[in-house]
Image (cartoon, rainbow, N blue to C red; front, side):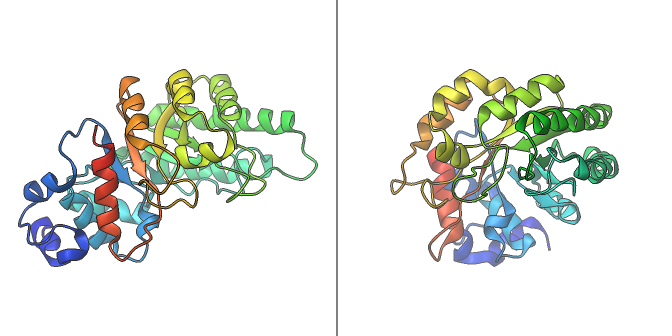
Length: 285
């Protein structure tokens, strides 16, 4: 099945109606295209990967986010980039702050960063991890810097960027140690590699510290990727939540950002691709 056939087969659920080509569907969501928008695969886990890729391509979006390695070729079939790949190098709970995880994290990057480079995947993800009982934050900081300094060499050798995600520890990820911009920036600065950056998740950081636009303005050089999400509840980024995403998108654009801006909200209604199209239009500044 080619992309045109797949898009037609989705019908109304892909918010492209009777559109017969990606070019026609593009007018429904992406018009400016100045900000390269993507979407997190897990938020649409009820859809087959082929159906989701067809819908994303039909909206005129260039990429899909957080795909497992075996899904990377599927995105390529639909003309989509993989904005961030999952390299099996750490988890939210078992991350870089705990030296017991370092061997597996480094092995995951050593095995899968070359695959990302070969597949044209620009970035792969890892996590700070949950704070281990009894470990001082100073030790966790030192452990994280040590792990990422070694991983940086692998990333540099293959031209792939590792992004470390900051998450909230207040609502969704109790115990997660990388819950502020300051924590992430201190580690990335100490590593000192252009191939180790932060994933600034707007939803998570609004919960933890707010002041999103000023934070982006002051720290954008450390951010290689962005995630969206409505606060509260990680729902649509519409008028029901507290952030004004067009202003945030404009600020990101003003920094000269050339990476991907990925939607990571959970659609609430019975038209999830319609919700995605509305978010894309909102941020298409």
